Image (cartoon, rainbow, N blue to C red):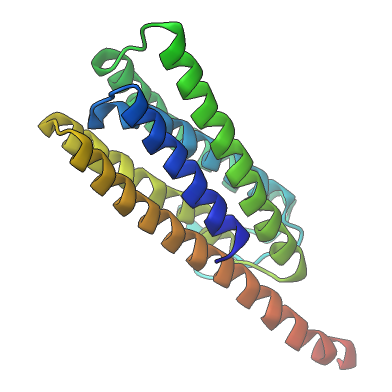
Length: 208
């Protein structure tokens, strides 16, 4: 198992352990997974801004292809931050109303989950960024991949509304972990494939 995937498993297991220890219902898992999604968004925006070479093939805005320069990169990062941020502000409003945090222990538990997800995503970002710097990733793909993280939050809202105990928590955490590992694998393979294609084309570019 790749280190980034292992870290995701450990972070999700920590969230499950805390949920069981504090007797949270399934709806309470919205909090740690919302935090995780925000962390992913932060690193996704950083990834967009720090990539040097990139392609915008098939990536358009208002009918025009996004420019393959610093302006195009910054405009994409700004749009992503605004759009992704609006989604999470809406979710935060839902969480605060439906699952307000009371007490120091719940707050500390949420903080522990948040720190574990920062640690996990930081390791994932390091792998992604290293591959991005060797290759020429598609800017549109980099922007859209993080949106897949919103799907599990939709699921937890539905499950939370239905209630459920220990079995529900375990089943959802398992499904969530599988989805996390799947996305991590896809993202990593895309980055590595882009780097490999750039390496293969380098001699040809040098001969031209």
